[in-house]
Image (cartoon, rainbow, N blue to C red):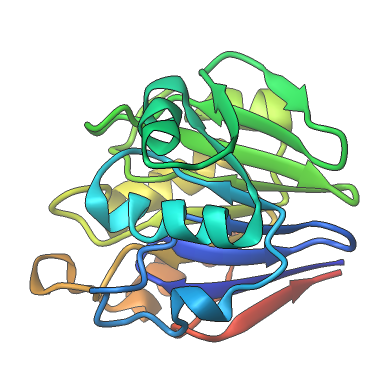
Amino acid sequence: MVKLKWLGHAAWLIEFKNVKVVIDPFLNGNPTASMKPEDLTNIDYVMVTHNHQDHVGDSFNIAKQNGSKFVAMYDTAAIAQQSGVQNIIGMNKGSMRNLGNIEVALTNAIHSGNESGIVLRADNVTIYHAGDTALFKDMELVNKLYKPDIALLPIGGFFTMGPNEAVEAVKMIAPKVTIPMHYNTFEQIKQDPSKFLEMCKGITNVVILSPGEEYTHE
């Protein structure tokens, strides 16, 4: 069983049986944030998809306050180290790595800012956080290599995929469950997620969350 709480924008708190992970914790300055950085405790891993401020967010402070391991692309991890983060795991795209209590892979993404997606696996559940990305054909390889049970996909458009592109992404990734993210934080990325749900009927089970709500995957 795994619990996924949407913290707003692309920020997530993911709780496996024995591992707590925070991804892209943009909380301070985020008008949709459902938690404050100090509310996040006993975090084992802080993971960041790319070095834009609305994704790096409060990640450095959260990692330092919790003694968390910090996982990101090598260049972003180097910035974290310069900011005083101690437990650095600077990776790159290419393969899945067993970190002891969780497996992690960084995948391709099409964006800017030393960008990546993140695949994480524990307790026989695989989650794909696409990060900020446009649609790209190699999402088929995410399905082929990792077979994610859950996909967290941006639908806001303007900076990332919009709903039309995200539907095509779902077809390639083939997750059991898809949860849209990275929308309605700012005016440029305003979207109605119910339309995305309708477009995905018969393809995947879309779960729509409001910031602060949680989905439990058995």
